[in-house]
Length: 298
Image (cartoon, rainbow, N blue to C red; front, side, top):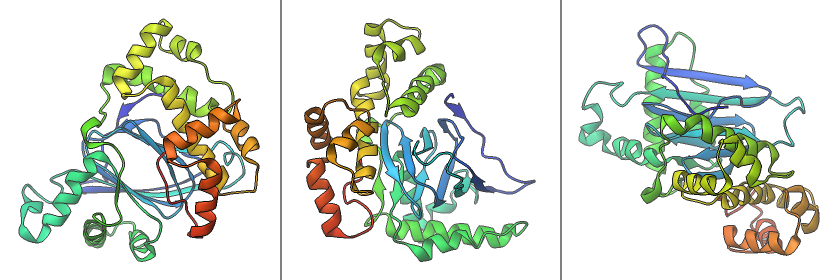
């Protein structure tokens, strides 16, 4: 797995691209584009890594990524191989796909603001059935009709992003990885994503980067703005939030299922990342009865 630049492909002379994915699991690597991407998760759940942040995603949610923002969707390791396909609809377009200055007009300033904020990644909740339904109106070989649908989607997102759109990355710490670091960092991320519920150690991660442990610690902190242990704990806590709102597993069982080997340490880390204890988190979710946890970031 490596971080890669991906050209926004279009059919023939089309000004934007529409892609539909239906497959056993997400297979894309950490990547970025020169333009914009809007993704509807029709069916799937797992984690999405954006810049230097990671959070859970669920069916019905919509994500928008701006130019140069590294991102990658990953399925929960427990759901892979169960015969359930991932289903996602992705729209990609360049900044000037409607012509230079098109979004500078007064009527379209909200969409321009949306595009500017997407540089840090925006997530929209799964409570917008009408908005999600717009994606189903894309049709093969209907470029003009599809263009109108895309503009409708952007207009809807521009109206909702102030109240419902969650900015994913910290404005002051947006990460845009250098190509020279891409493969090295991706091998580390992939190692953690595949093994966080088992044993993850810094020596193995350092060896993947072909560095000494001390050099690796400095390198990882410089490139991600967090320590390696913080990164691993974020992923484990993210998985824990999903387990806490699922089956009635005990806190101890969830602790071990996420890769922690000490319940007290798990409780402390959970409170650091979520602001409340695992037991309180479960109670908040049950009381809210909203179908999704109120605290999203891990």
